[in-house]
Amino acid sequence: MRSSTTNSKLAQFMEAFASKVRGPGVVYFAGGATALDLAIRDQTIDVDIKLDPEPLHSFEAIAEIKEELDINVELASPDQFIPALPGWRERSSLVKKIGPVEFRHYDIYSQTLAKIERGHSQDITDIKAFLEKNLIEKSKLLELFNSIKSELMRYPAINAIEFGKKVESFCK
Image 1 (cartoon, helix red, strand yellow):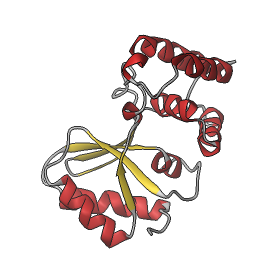
Image 2 (cartoon, rainbow, N blue to C red):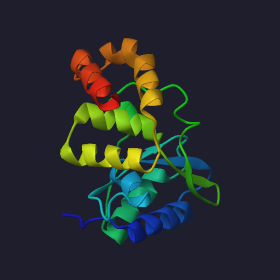
Image 3 (tube, rainbow, N blue to C red):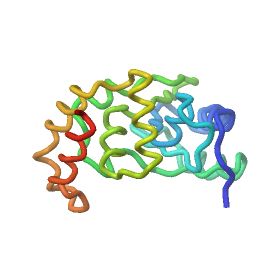
């Protein structure tokens, strides 16, 4: 079992990843990694990432880093659970650039909607912190949700009506 990841381990992950890959790319942090970096949490179990575009030798680097730092790295992002929001890349804020590799937070609106849909207690705590830190606006969140409603049928695990009710309730 892996130990919890702290902010120092996240920083070590970025340095190690950038030093091991060959070429440019972008690593998007999501979930606990974003919450950790934004000081919403003190630790996380997994470092959830999306690679787009994927730097050369990313998977070899991840395999080595997982062992070296004793962390759990998962390929997981909001667009695996809900439709990708229009403009998500442009809203994905830069964390750090190391050499040719950019580290970004996957769009906070996308993360918020995915967390609302899942509805775990930690998810609700995270999105309340996003609000407190003024990282999201409820009106914009509702607008973005409405922009993907017609695509929800492509995600059979989602009950679109219930998801819509959760989003509307949160945005009140």
